[in-house]
Image (cartoon, rainbow, N blue to C red; front, top):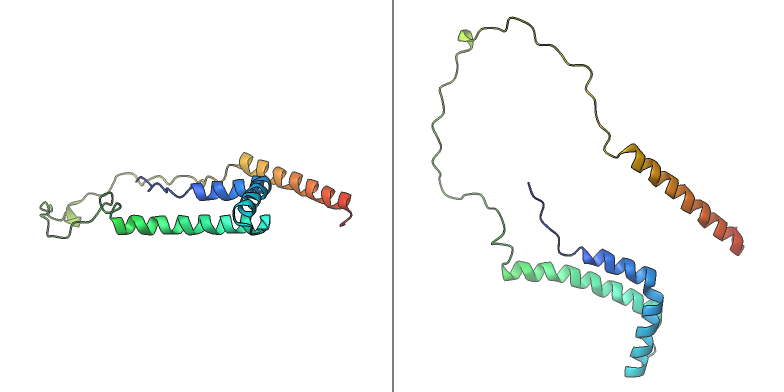
Length: 145
């Protein structure tokens, strides 16, 4: 079964870029807004406003698509009217069945594969410890700890 493709995946990328590179962008935008309108805008207020605006846009676009009916043509629907079913074969009489000559062999204990590959999990834990050490080092350098 094919998963429905989400067209709003850009919102996470935009928020990530705004948080990572938002300081120069928001300073530039706040200076442009100040020159155009004379209204002093704090860059952090502008960053929060851009994030809220992107969330609002990402929630309104699917609503507008639903109203427009674009999704109706792509959806798989169940039939609503009566359909003809093929005839069913008659049930098999259990007394006419012969038991198997050899008992079925039971397999060994079932083996369950892990959901997450252990190498990826190990890489993630090592990365978490690494960034935790860097964070603690930065806190100790600034005198917080």
